[in-house]
Length: 142
Image 1: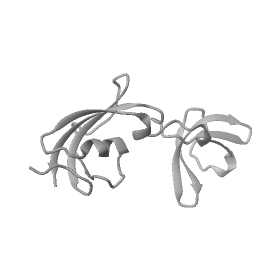
Image 2: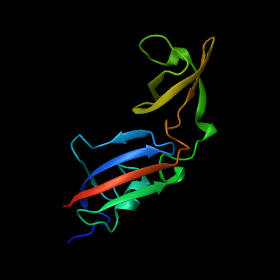
Image 3: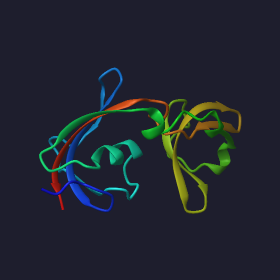
Image 4: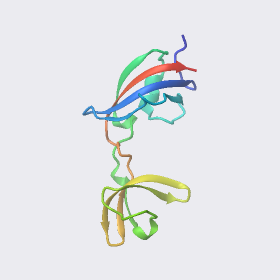
């Protein structure tokens, strides 16, 4: 039986939970996730948890924030002139939106304040600073 290692394509089902048990994402009742271990398309803690697992394996991994969606970074709160933001509808505190920070580079941001022509945006990932738990079932190592 083949065990997953860096460079292997794997097919898995997973459920991600916050520390209070809230599910933030799951592939259960959907098509399984297929990924290449080590390609950086999932959080580092997820990839690390896959290494060494064989088809049929089921693990529960507690992943600290720095190996999940990153530590909350106050430097990622930025103020911009709202005339430079293309948005449908009103700019409301709490609204999540896509913002182009440089040509061809968009990030997701949350509006945290609107004062006159200035909009303050939090560009941290919504789960930054959160420790998470992943339940992972390996279906195939391809």
